[in-house]
Amino acid sequence: MKLTPMYRTIVVLGIVAIGMGTAVAKRSDARLHRTFSADEVSRVEVAAKEKAVEIRRGESDEIVVTAHITVKRSLRSRNPHQADDLVRRFQKNPPFDQNGDTLMVGYPDDKQFAIHAKISYEISVPAGVDVTTL
Picture 1 (tube, rainbow, N blue to C red):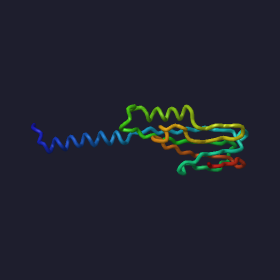
Picture 2 (cartoon, rainbow, N blue to C red):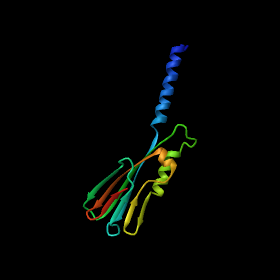
Picture 3 (spheres, helix red, strand yellow):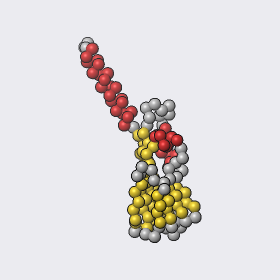
Picture 4 (cartoon, one colour):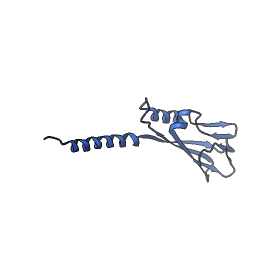
């Protein structure tokens, strides 16, 4: 069977479209949960970026921080695993710091996160715990 130039063009465009759709759609998503005792934390300070923080008053005696991280995989990246690596780095060393009775929730101080990642937080705090957004 001889392929006409039009048929070849359609096949090539179809393959390119499928490949681009797969490449663009790839990303790494993760959730991270951390729980802190309200007996040890009386103040939470949150670095709020682009309204990516939702704070709720909970009924329990715990502070629950849930981080949602999405990292887009760059088509131009020399490292095809960069998105997965960023997610793993975030999970291994989340930007939560407890200093005395203050819990600080922030964002990684890393240019790669700023460029490729979106991080949002849901934070549940019991009554009596002060919350400040910075």
